[in-house]
Image (cartoon, rainbow, N blue to C red; front, side, top):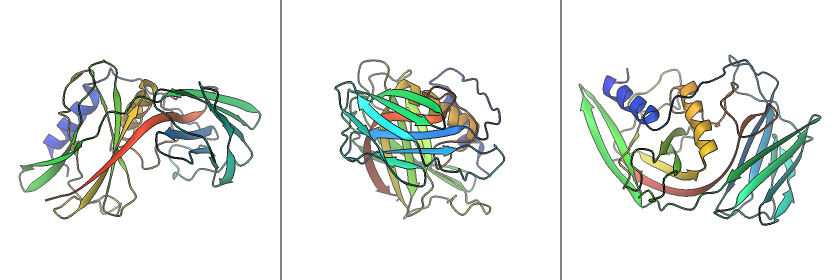
Length: 271
């Protein structure tokens, strides 16, 4: 079992930085699900459009194949994305730049969906430091992302990590409501048990490599992932969406999100 300290600390990190979010967990089977990302890294950027399934079903979403997908920014840059299969629409020449506001417009199945997201400035991801604590016979390893929050209040961060060559991502979100303008003091807690029912759940031990991605995100995406973490209760689903409905920044009843964010990556071998 996960030890009590791990549970208490994890809940504190999630709830201490943002007010409680009321979640509507209606069954939204059959709704449009949109996952769109634009970053400060070179494209292509992907917008994936699928249909939701019932909350109790496996996360296998039917693809929407005949949508019109357009992205633009507040400088006049615009592009119609090309469909490449599996519900994915990609850019060919679009550029993500910090400070710009991006708009997504989708025409699908007789409805129009729109969303906006502003890409924050880069906050330098300076490294990772390792720590651990022991409770009984169990050792839990933690990683501290090293960065200094800017002095202006309102920065939001999304961290995800993977272990070794596994594809499962674990998510955490930070805000600067508590430690504005300070060096980060909030660690990422690494898995401290194996799950016999899920081979992608791996207990971290010395010699494992952990790959960490830091994103600077806007407030709406922070709210979305905060709610998603409340729904999942375990670091978030690997795909970034659920068939339920956390508060989306996409209108007209769509599930999912559209995020313009910065990306930085680091890795560390557990000692």
